Amino acid sequence: MQVAQIYTDNDYRNFNYLIACEETGEALAVDPLAADLCLAEAERRGWTITKFVNTHEHLDHTGGNARMREATGATLYAHAGAGASIEGIDVALKAGDSIRVGRTVELEALDTPGHTMSHVCLLAHADQPSLFSGDTLFNAGAGNCHNGGHPKELYQTFRTIIAKLSDDVTVYPGHDYLEHNLGFTLDREPSNVRAQSLLEEVRGRDPHQAVPTSLGLERAINVFLRLDQPEVMARLLDGEAGPATGLDEEAVFLALRDLRNVW
Ligand SMILES: [Zn+2]
Image (cartoon, rainbow, N blue to C red):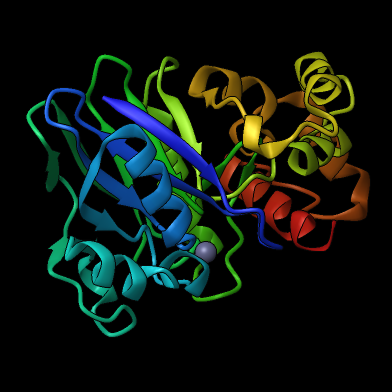
């Protein structure tokens, strides 16, 4: 499996992806908003885009669909629940469905509601296991829930799906928010030295040169995956947010999501 991460250089800081089979050169485009950048990258690498997928229905993920279709005639995959909001879906995805790319790549669709209720993440079972996480899991953060989602559903997705993935899974999110999100982790957990050192490393970095994280690293630097940390809980109990008692992991997650909305 080969992956090209394409930074779109727009206000939303979207990442688009091409996932290719190295034997056949066939490629899948993920959320190709910048369709022409994706087409140029495919041409540069000698790949042919035969399929494309939307992780969810937001326009900054689907806005390149018409151009991609026109240029390639590729097959469009998206969540089975997104039929009313994404035009022209060819293959509706349910949990456990797979998308094959060429001979060597197989991506499993994970049903991951929360950011929206019709969101898929794609898990590549490959030499390097990888998660294309859309707007569910970001580097050092979690998707917001105020455009069709629900924070309790997002928590369940983190608890039942993200939590079960192994540390060696590479994380490819839908946006470049790493630097900003590290600031939020450190606001909640000032003593997190891995987050501090990573922030030093990536501050001002050109997103075209972004290096993906692993889930193991996320578990060290992403406060939404650190719900049981005493410092995180203690700061919520300081009174500026969240419940004063009963800090179970769901309550911590929901309080963090609320705080992040206004941070
Ligand atoms: Zn979105």
